[in-house]
Image (tube, rainbow, N blue to C red; front, side, top):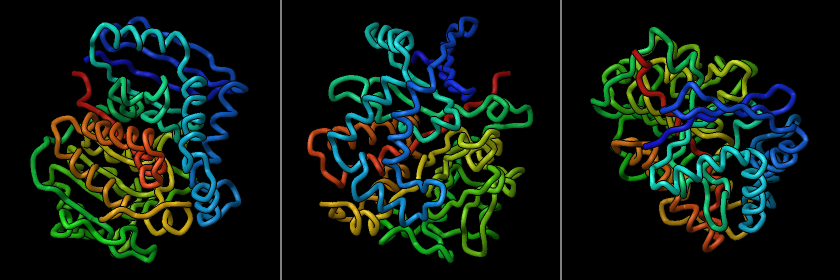
Length: 357
């Protein structure tokens, strides 16, 4: 496996740097002019169900689901192509191609900036009918201050699953029905979660996350009340964690990415699966997206099961990418609303192995 770390930084223009892990002393840095990257990023923001300033969640869902670019295959392909052209500079593309042509497996670890945090990297259309996820394994790179913190210890991949699947909260349920494969799991609450996580090998959360002005105040909603990212600091976190909730992976939207993903990584998680934007439910998709008919079991429930399965694999990043690749192929070949990237492209995996030394 050949691995490259790619970092984006907002400083007026968009700066991109990359370094190959086998050649760390030769980083590359380029400037992407803001007037080049701003239009496709703005088009992406218009296509997503994350509210614009002054917009309600219902208004945002209506905008994105009734006529947004991710509901139409041709418009989505055009948007994904323009994002790839704007965000992957030619020099980096040539170096990536060289690895692929040499027959080596490629792992691209991406640390987004605030302006690029919602980019669905896996879905970027880098060639005719090919997405980035067809050519590489893709994961999210957490900041070095988080993943290499001196006090951080990666938890072993042993123990049962600790779960809170669609817990009862004032914000309501997100699943039409809990999948049978998950129905037997205990639904942990605010009081029982911490001791369960201390013994678990995996953590699966499906529910609601709300964001705030500060990353540490991002909230995971459970029965008996929410937990903030700040509350989780100091907890022991299992090796694999998944937060299937609206914008649960939004750490990089903040100048200091210290939200829920960072808290889980700091507590010992090696893999954290989270979402980039507001995740539409089957009820919302059925009501608002033209031609959408929920498959048996539900589209969102299918994504939950894919994440649950990926958590159990030796390489959760590759496993989730496999599911995303299959979803992308179905979307590309059929344009079926049930395969909209609004669901499968929302997910990213933060990969944070044990710090060196």
